[in-house]
Amino acid sequence: MRKRKMFLGTVLMIVLSLALAACGGGGNGDGGKESKGDKGDKKDYGVKFLSIATGGTGGTYYPLGGNFANLIKDATGVEANAVTSGASAENMALIKKEEVEVAFTQTDIATYATEGTRMFDGDKVENMKGLGTLYPETVQIVTTEKSGIKSIEDLKGKTVSVGESGSGTLANAEQILEVHGLTLDDIKARNLSFDDSTTGIQDGTIDAAFITAGTPTGAVEGLAATEKVVIVPLADDKIDKLIDKYPYYAKEKIQSGTYGSDSEVNTVAVQAMLVVRDDLSDDLVYEMTKAIYENTDKIGHAKGELISAEKALDGMAIDLHPGAKKYFDEKGISSE
Image 1 (cartoon, rainbow, N blue to C red):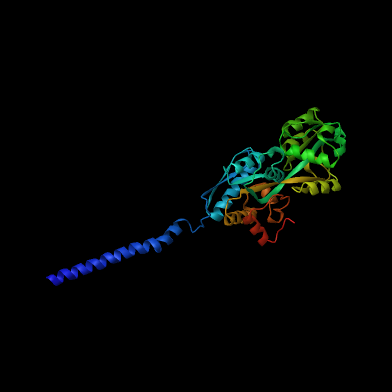
Image 2 (cartoon, rainbow, N blue to C red):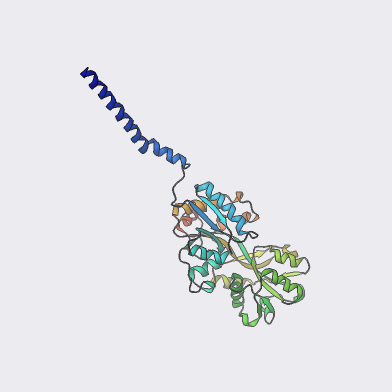
């Protein structure tokens, strides 16, 4: 009887030991694999969610942001979402306050932000790096055939809209006038929106307007419906001088037929671009960059046709995030 009790006790101890071993093995072995499987075998990038600051719902940045969010999520497993904003300058503030991780802006605005100049005077953004440029935001000096304006020098003494106060367009106007030996004092400057600028040209209250936007621009197309629009060209030597001093510009041509023109027009553009917070991991930014530039055929927007890895460093005048740099280095693409 006593032997039987000892035998049963031994069996019970063995069963308990096996049960404990199974539980322990589940925590360190198979259980870990299941946990990884539950996450879809995606890498831990240190963030669970990415907010992409874009612009207004009626602009280009917002729908592109939604497309990019989907590409990033598919590639990394990290949830991403496009959020509306006041666009370029406001997006720099959102990055600085760490309210978003990714943002659309323009190459010139990003440069001002990192330098703490112009609208960012005394308010430098130091936690931001470049991911890549996207497509040109063309500097268009718009007038009409009846104005007689054919060159930048012809703007002297004229009433000209130079963009809203504090805008990137205003900076573009000042810099282009500068390389032509002019200043805002040499014109009758008006700070108007794009729509108000073209309305002013139409009703004769202004003679010309600086408009920095993707072409064709809706406000200018509206003007072209009633007037013979002229886009004032920039001479090659002035373009070179401008880019030498302000490397965030790139050469650009407005194609023949745009706004009813019968020839192409030489001008410059700043680039729409993406920036990221510098505390995002190199691996994550590498995968984000790769996801965008290797899936441009999946971008459901007309601007997708203009986005390419080969042009993604055009006009890039701020430091690249190391993760983005790794991607472009692998592709043999350099900004130099």
